[in-house]
Length: 245
Image (cartoon, rainbow, N blue to C red; front, side, top):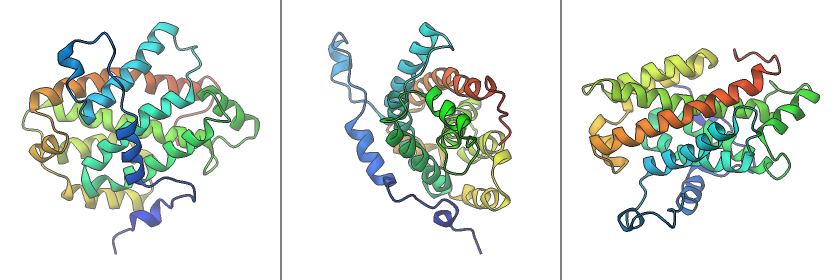
């Protein structure tokens, strides 16, 4: 019997549903700069461009402040919440990722009123010896980081060859980023779900993108998300916490 996604990833009582998160995304999309051209102002952001914009803003802060900058949790969660819509566009095959990712982002967002920065999260859990404990914020952050990297790797594979199918791109991305940390049951469920992925053309239609516009926005996310992913990794390694979990 195929594993049940909801059983694999039980939701906490205060977790928003994926549908509520999508509504939050639509309400919190990045506003256009007042000095933007009239053409830009009148152009509605697509899901991809909204994600790319948000991570470029975070990346710009990281580049200007350096890796010692204490990244604030609230804007980080705002950017990450936009990515959940991309998981949803992949359909049932990535439902496992959407459920887990949305749950973890929401937990972190709720904690932003107590813990102002990503560093604060790690400091709190280190003091309480709970970094790797199920449900801890440090563990949630680690899982969100894997989700960001999964989308980054999927986009890279998607753009590598014009005839690369979404199934090929997603399978390779999952194997590289998340599979090493998932149980056999989850890996089996993911493998079975890959057959239900949309085609390359269907994905572009769902994202309201052309081949050309999708490539531009995907490359923007790839380049902007990498410094954020590396920053999160450094939060752990600088405290002598391994990344093999």
